[in-house]
Amino acid sequence: MKIDTLVLGPVQTNCYIVYNEGSGQAVIIDPADDGEKIRRALDGKNPAAILLTHGHFDHTAALSAFSGTPVYIHPADQIMLEDSEWSAGYLVGDVAPRPCDAEYVQEGTRLHLAGLDIAVLHVPGHTKGSVAYAIGDVLFTGDTLFCRGFGRTDLPGGSMAEEMRSIKRLLRLKKNWIVCPGHGEATTLDAEREYFL
Image (cartoon, rainbow, N blue to C red; front, side, top):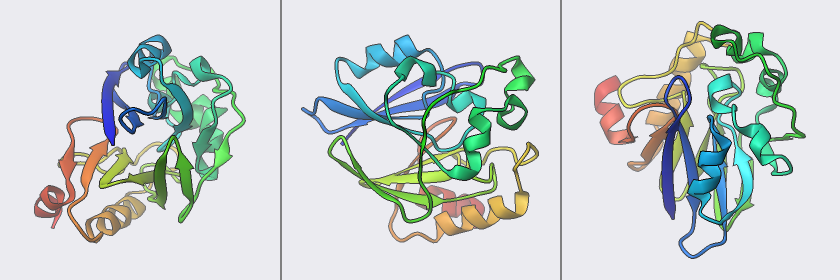
């Protein structure tokens, strides 16, 4: 499995392009901004799907550049695609809705896209519908878990108590997963266990 990382948008959000070497397809995780830059990074690969870790504006800004591509989000965060008060876009003047016919994922959902087996973990706290995607030996955690930190919980739908439960849940997972977060550098669960526990 190959992972290309783009750092995009006003708050330096990680957008991931995930694919198998030699495949003509890829999945995009959190199209943060600059759809044209993401298209160039696809390098001719067809975007089979867009996976959203949650619905905040800085993880969805380039959705309109991929009209017709299936979009997956937890139903609790659907409102964030429609309302900038919920997406926090109003904080930076990004009030445009993200119209799309989203498909829903939830705890235990399993997807097979672009030749990749993807498992979904519901990890609320940063938002009500935050999810992590497990692909191979990598966890794409959005803003639920960073390298030595986590996303804010004071925006609509956030909960510090739920965030702490979700982090503990991730840290209890067996094996030393690679963590690709929504912001900042990659880390591992072992490194975060040392920090948090």
